[in-house]
Image 1 (tube, rainbow, N blue to C red):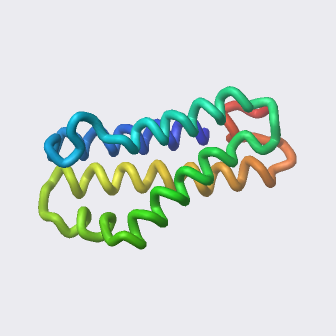
Image 2 (image 1 turned 60 degrees about the horizontal axis):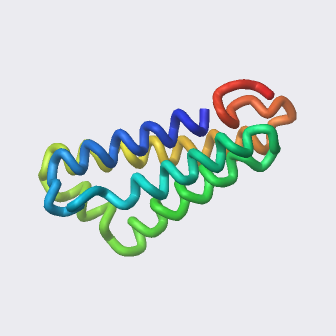
Length: 117
């Protein structure tokens, strides 16, 4: 499930890119970070701490966006795809944080990658 949430975040970044390609030219770097975290989660799926990569990337991008003011300015930009992309991205990132924490603390480990292990 963490992988799915990170996938949603990538979709949000792609929507933002479609709305303002010049802002992210040649390609949104956040996608590489999110995909890197997803790869770590997938490769470590047998370990209890596997979702930690999703938690950290979700918190880092969200916290950084709020602190730098980029998240709020993007949400207030008026550009439909910029706003929509940020909402989708944040839903995915915050979903990865919540689902990742639940997966780590759950005795069943449901949610780490989409299957109970």
